[in-house]
Amino acid sequence: MLRDFERHLCVEWIEKFNQSNLQSNERFAESLIRGRSNKGIGELRIRNELKEHQISEEIVAAAMSELSIDWFELAVKVFKKICGYPCYRF
Image: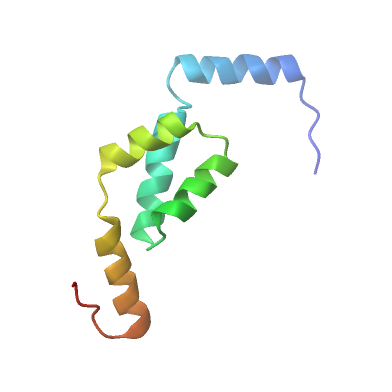
């Protein structure tokens, strides 16, 4: 179903949302990183998904460091879930 919106009105509302902090690339990045990592998805895949959403590398790096996820520990949990036995650290 196609909707006929006037472009200038859409741009105007998006700008209002940005000014009111209702639309934020930073919050979107943090939310996506948190949600995907909780599902066991790794850092590179998450970075690529954020790149597809045209989120800047600076925002991605800031969100990644703020959330400080232990990617190795996440990989160990996913390995254990898939294989059924623990992966031992070396």
